[in-house]
Length: 165
Image (tube, rainbow, N blue to C red):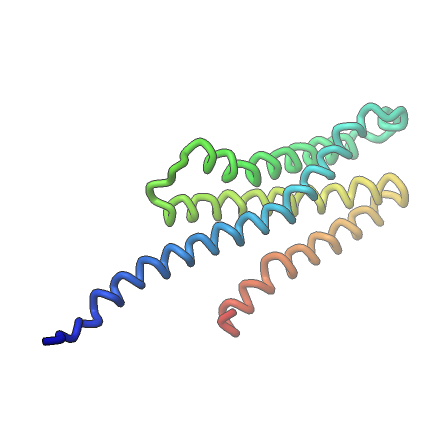
């Protein structure tokens, strides 16, 4: 009288639900990451926008102006790349292929982070060079670049490969 239902259909229904929940979690993670990266890029860009209007900017040497130009370019690039996924998501809603969108958004975030890392390194060089001289500025920029390289890029790759985090 009572038939036992096979368990396979229930499992197959749970798999898409779990996959959807994981994708939603990935989007939440990406949003949290954006909340950390974007304000830093915005602050750096804001600082760089007002710098040329400071009276002392005219007195910096041509090389420092070139470093400023590169820093400003990378800071603006980081803002564009880091904000692109949010704008794209809003324009493309509802998403048809969430996994593909996540891949593209991840690439944009990584590219934006690379641009931000470059801007932070060059910005360190620019500020320290003005205060303490070119050599100290280069050393400080190299230290900052090394810290970013190790903490943002190498450590996560190492942990992912060795410890399966």
